[in-house]
Image (cartoon, rainbow, N blue to C red):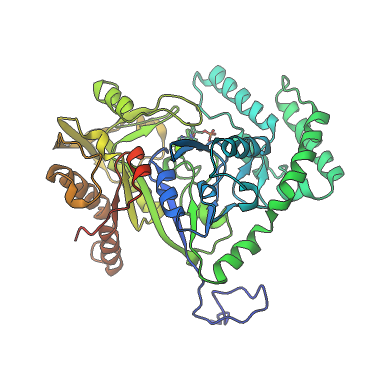
Length: 477
Ligand code: IMP
Ligand code: MG
């Protein structure tokens, strides 16, 4: 078999590179549950050192709050690295962009404090990213109403137009940033066609096309200085001088369109593949993949949730954890940590470390449960069920731990934690790190496990992290 001489390097720039020069590696931060695990917080910590912070998928359906010098900044579409004036932020081709939302978010945050000053100069937008239009958001709402009427239930979307925009992309009628910046007459024709397509599906949809196009033309000029060929930009970032590149996943593994709890998912790939396809990063240039998980489980919106606690425990987690959605203001559903799903997320993403967040929310509990396996008809099942009706029916097998009943919110190091909390964390590591689905006889899985076990990062509550940005890198071996 004949191999291409320079397997790692496309000869894009005509520059000769050493065969061993694989380039810089991107660190990827991903949600390991149903979202809101505190990814933003982990990203913010890593972003203080990053040169380039990227979003690869999703849109302004994501959301998190960052507190700097007592000022609260809300992010939905902007990479949270935008807060760091020394780094560049990139919105990749896999993201869907609602331009009014993007500028409103930037302008609103800019007024709050000094962190966002000059944000437009630090933001790069891929020319291949698809646009979310106002009518996509209206359609999102109409589809939810339709679901309620037809099936008696909704998906509980954020109504940010994410599903309809990705639908336009997949049906090849969508419009991208590069289309908006090219011939506006062509863009206007395609925009009108797209509106007609949706109006033929939704008779009640009214769109003031002229007004929309007028606004889009204005946004186009504001956006133009930020737009680059995303693929070339990323290639240069990977193969230029050493750079710390960070990819900020939005949403989470169980909301992934392929691997999540379909149909109660979002419309993009929130697992590690999304970092490659959403930014044009070759798999070889993916470095650390950090999975973020809360010390318990939450979910917004509808869908199966095996460890959900519709009782005092759930209420305690909700109030102590301030579990309210940043984007929608909805109360989050709460339950025990479900290691079946975190392990499932690990199977797909191959985490090199897990960041465990909000451990201190559990401080007051007498006993703490962890879901370790699912049973169907009394029998353990080894996989995570694809079908939601099956997932609704599973019985969770729990492991019970005594609570540590100690305030851990100020803990920064492993040794600051009470032994019972250490036990809880060790159990989590072992359970995810020694999964039965791995062939324990194979060398690679042993090696893998070793790497995984050595890098567990524990965070306590969000506020404490903002005050003291310390990552405790704990060697557990
Ligand atoms: P969409 O992404 O707005 O279409 O919403 C689809 C589903 O994903 C809904 O159940 C949302 O609540 C959920 N979802 C989307 N983004 C997030 C997020 O960032 N955190 C938590 N849930 C999310
Ligand atoms: Mg969030």
